[in-house]
Amino acid sequence: MNPMFFDGWAPLFRTTVVGVLAYVALVAILRATGKRTLSKLNAFTLIVTVSIGSTLATVLVSKDVAPAQGILALSLLCVMQSVVTWASVRSAFVRGFV
Image (cartoon, rainbow, N blue to C red; front, side, top):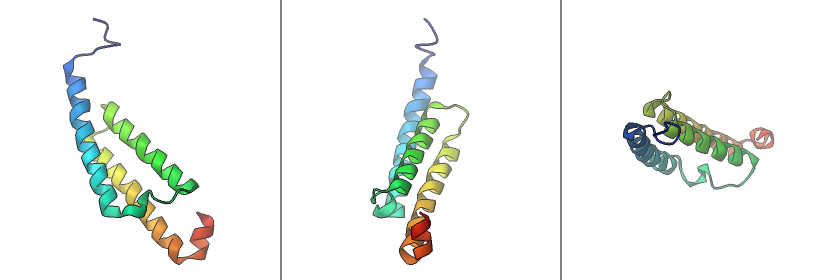
């Protein structure tokens, strides 16, 4: 069979396991960082949302990215979003910058 379409069961198993782990981690991270992480629809939130999706996709399909590394990247994006949201509520300068 052509490896372009099917490269064995191991990559499919890895994608399944990493996908479930990454999804559970992402839900836990979003719950921990609060509902505001992705709730306000502005340009900054859109960028973070696309970044989270891109990171999740990379973790799922790239053998070069360890699941722990991907979960750390997702956590970092969500924590930074929370920090920027917190700062923008308290600072007109940050709000204007974002």
